[in-house]
Amino acid sequence: MAPRSKNKYSGRMTSSQQSNARRRQEAPKNPADYVPPGTKRIDVGPLLETAKPGMDPDAPLTLARVIGVTMATIQTALPTILAWATTMGLIFGGCCSNVFALETIVKEQPGAGNLITFVQFLVTALLTWPEHFSTARPPFFLKRRTIPLVRWLPNIALFFTVNILNNFAFSYNISVPVHIILRSGGSVTSMLVGFIWGRRYTPVQVLSVALITVGIVIAAMADAQSKGKSTSGPSEIDPSFITGLAILLFAQILSAIMGLYTQLTYTTYGSHWHENLFYSHFLSLPLFIPLFPSLKSQFRSFLHSDPAQLSPALLQLVPSFSAKANDTDQLPPVLLTLSNTTLPIPKDIFFLALNALTQYVCIRGVNVLSATTTALGVTIVLNMRKLVSLLLSIWIFGNELPLGVLLGATVVFGSAGLWAWEGQRSARKERLRKQGKRQ
Image (cartoon, rainbow, N blue to C red; front, top):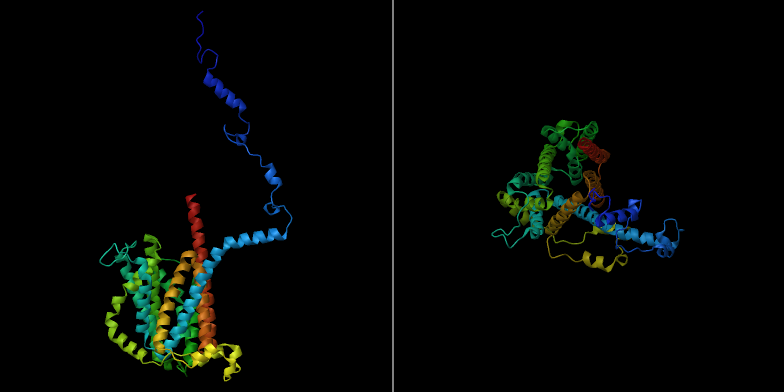
């Protein structure tokens, strides 16, 4: 018989096979306990014995542990809190100040809507221009756009028209409080335009829009009656007031179309609101050229307004001063100096600039909020802001709104919140349904 060869068929293992068998014998039964060769083992027993009580969830509650956990929580949440507080400051501070400056102007210059809109657009375009400036792209020195310019043109035309109409409505005896209430009913026109566009809505959304409509009608009719525009019947309502309502309604319809168009643009190209903010204001400026004669006349009227000075009515805002408004010893030196000193600029020019600057702050805050929270959160915050603006208008300017206007405002704001809540719930339900189909 021939001798067996020393290979894998001879029954004897080669050196490599022996090494593999030895590693299998030394390997732990549990794969989780396997440690690769050369790995350094560290005994953490002494570390656990000397660990601080605050790191053990079962350790007794001490003051040091409470302070440590509190400081860690504050350190983690502080950036979010500061960002949220800044956004709220931009919205409530900017938007409410904007309404204050606007009402101050329209009470003396109700026909200055075109000039107000032009200055707002000009200031916003100038303040947002540095973000889009680039020396490497002459002759316009603007950065490359993410969204094509052609796509912005319809949005620019709609944006210009909506803002012109909203401010132009003040020429037709529309008060600022009623203006705020009517513009809060944008859900009505949004549903009408969306339905024509092919969208469908839930019964709760339809109910909320119906309530908003009722609230707007109640507020408008009550305001007309309080001003003596309706005496014995609907036929005696001031036609100018009806014209103002029609202008605001048409502006709301265009605003709903613009909102849908902007949403489609963002869906296609991404949410680039910085571009929208700049180009919608910058490229709208040439559209004011046909309005130059009226702008010139309105600006001349602003220049001839009284010099800006501290209004005595502001002293009534401080309770400690109102009791002894005539006693100069009760007033701070700063207020005494300002009340007797006029500013070297016309009052209407001052409030015109204040209105434009606060308009930019307000828009900035709304866009930041839209980028960091849901549509429901945006709607709730904006409705609260409009309600605060309405209350400030009543308080500062002494607008005595009748019960019907207040009732209509309550219905409008409450129903707008219901609309936003139902829209958010439907969107979340639709997302879950799509996720279930993918799975």
